[in-house]
Image 1 (cartoon, helix red, strand yellow):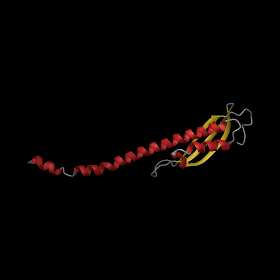
Image 2 (cartoon, rainbow, N blue to C red):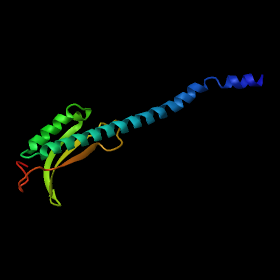
Image 3 (cartoon, rainbow, N blue to C red):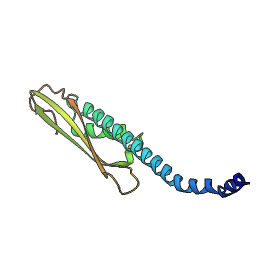
Image 4 (cartoon, one colour):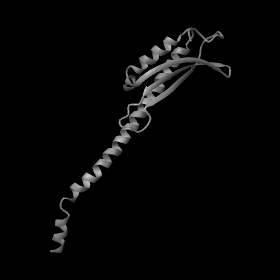
Length: 137
């Protein structure tokens, strides 16, 4: 008889446990999804910046070649809608000239926690033969 009373006292406890645990599980799942999305956008932006830098590093290429190649590489990804600014520049260090493409983008995050912008840079060695650093940079 006592076992029956204990069993009756446990009725409905699964619903209460679900209501207490479900928000925590959903919060953890949303955090993992947000981290995965931010990592994907970051890696896509880095790859597109490097691709644009390689295009801008070709001999006789100007900054518009690098910007257009970066935009073309971004056009097929979900990261394309997050880009705010693309900047191209040349620099010389340790005897080598490089082209750098810098992309500034919004992070597609939900919620107010964490960073809101992301800046990545792709570099490539310049192929220019003259010492002036190429055209129109």
